[in-house]
Length: 263
Ligand SMILES: C[S@@+](CC[C@H](N)C(=O)[O-])C[C@H]1O[C@@H](n2cnc3c(N)ncnc32)[C@H](O)[C@@H]1O
Image (cartoon, rainbow, N blue to C red; front, top):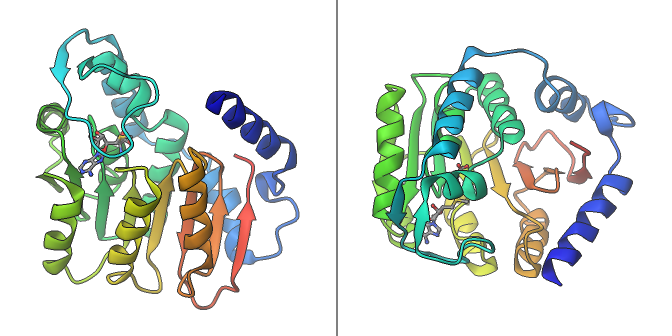
């Protein structure tokens, strides 16, 4: 039933979302964002390297014991999971990962945080455009984190700082030790209260040019509610709903507007 509802929501998005490829957008900032970044055509070598890693993970029958956190998985019920299943169901898709890469490549955030590392595919996309950017990523499952670390080593991604532990405990510790957040990828505990809690903590370290990227904003009724509250927050100006994820800007020079963009 839940699955049918989700498919219907997606169909509605596909049929009603406007602004495909910039049509009807009056904001010059958003027009540039949609045309040059979301639909950016530039090719980067890193795309192939990450695609190759994904391909290897999707072939791997190795099993690990997964410690389940938060909202868990809608499709993987056992705690002993094959790497190929984790890669298939948890990792950011190629299309969205490459879009994440383009956002980072364009805005050049220096302090990046990912909540929920999994196998590290979603960490490598933002970590590869600039070796100078410091990337923090928090994962609660030790065996999954170990696999991610192997992937980071394979990529010589020395700018990734992996933190193993519950986001609830590790996020306040990390935020105490950093001055600002330029980009945050929220992809850990996909529950309303946790999402809003992480959002308000990260907001303390956000500034005018910070970008927040939320995964699975329409995944459940709770995530829909969280997304609505985030959009309403007085510090938030422009938001972009891409159905599978939502992007939040805080730039005071932009008027407060919420867009649904077909992607
Ligand atoms: C959807 S996956 C992340 C995928 C990854 N960001 C990517 O794009 O490839 C979510 C991950 O968050 C972790 N997680 C969920 N809740 C957590 C929590 N409260 N503390 C730490 N990790 C958590 C899970 O173990 C899982 O590996």
